[in-house]
Amino acid sequence: MHSIRLRHPWDCEVGEGRAVWSRVFNWPNELNSQETLWLAVEPLPDAAQIRLNGQLLDTANPSGRFDISQIVSKSNHLEIVLPDTLGADESECPLDVRLEVHEG
Image (cartoon, rainbow, N blue to C red; front, side, top):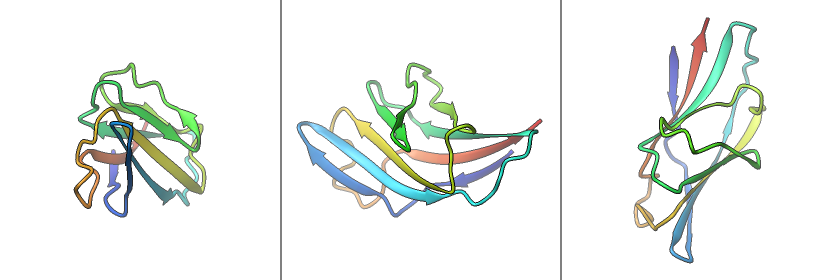
C-alpha cells in the first residue's frame, strides 16, 4: 500500500452549525487493473457527509474508508461536511485524510 496524506490547503466555510472542509487535489496517475484507490477519513464523525467530484460517498461505513477508483479523475474536488464546527477555527482540516493505493 502507498499512502498520500491530503494536508493543506483546505478551505473551510462555517454556517448553520456545520463546517464544510473542501480542497482540490490532482491524480495524474492511471490505475492499472491490479490497483484500487481508497479515500481514508479518520476519525469519521457521526453524520459527516463526504463528496468527491459531486458524488456523495456512503458514510454508513464506520471505517471511514471509501473505494474511489471509479470516480477519481485528473482534477478532483473533495468536500467533507461536518455536523458541527469541529476545528473550524484551525488552519488545517481536523481530520486525517489520505489517499491509499492498494495493489492486488
